[in-house]
Length: 455
Ligand code: AMP
Ligand code: ZN
Image (cartoon, rainbow, N blue to C red):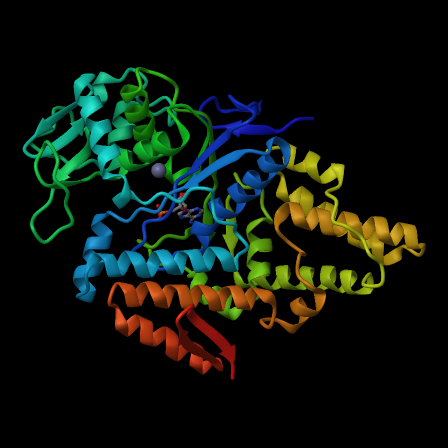
């Protein structure tokens, strides 16, 4: 069997075939960096990271882009509330986000574009949309004219009334149609802004992903992914912008959407306040157990987050690492068993992979011959590898927190401190130094950079 993926655009499971097998392209919408990200935000990055690795195994060359949104009104508000420049907020939380991703074993994407580094491309795309008759300028704003694109609504399949209700559209006198959305808006002197043909201003949210995907991956990409909460309006608007700027050429061939992570029965979200920050969770629990928990449901299904789920994941990993410890006397390379590849081919059926891991471990505990133990250890390590699990030394897992993971976390904190110092946020820099000192980690400034050692 080959890789089958549920494509939200067609509402069908389809065999995946890249446009150019020597260059598979994937774009995933990244976070807005104004606060610590929560464990729900990690769900797309974990599952689509598993997909990126699978594509790399199958095709070799993959270009995976996951952006960082560093221009947004929420960032402006956070900077105002905390009395610091906007760059301090974005540098601090982009570094914290990278640290959280590393802690959860999420490899960095090939490209991590930031909006502030793509303003010329954004302006150019907006100019193209105006030239093609799909956008218009009004009172310092540039708006996308949704009525100009016949395909509007093809992803979310909503009618106009539903779209208006879903987008909670801002009624503004300068809009020709209430559904028209902002591509560019004016900035007052106290807000971040760039010179443009429409005056000093900043981009709207949706245009950034269209412009950055085109800049790094091309006009038509293979896979576009993100949470199902982004399907409308964000992804619908991305399609409208990209296809209208590119003469109608299809923007993304496969649209993948993860289901929501719920907490207390409702979507975990910053605006509702029912969040658990990764930053706190990874300090309270073994990060690998959090990763295991995120993979315990198929990505399109909702997943209810709870302490019980974390506890259960820890117990399962205790058992699996116990098995690996008992197999320490046999040498075996990690080889992904065909059954695991087949489960992933089935629209990334990670619970089925986890069931396969449990089965292999059960057999390994009963196996007596050296050959069988070697084979099963190979399978177990390989199956774990496919999901980014079971790659630690069992001793490190059982020691909790003294593993190599901790070195990654410490280095990420040091990187965050360097970024804070660079943006003159000395309060944050000192807080990180004090936090590390509290853990018995001493920092030393050397000409080669910051070194650390355990006291
Ligand atoms: P945001 O910063 O809210 O734009 O979210 C960044 C990414 O996390 C997007 O792909 C969202 O769809 C995803 N996301 C946000 N909240 C959740 C949640 N509760 N469960 C799963 N994914 C989420
Ligand atoms: Zn996006």
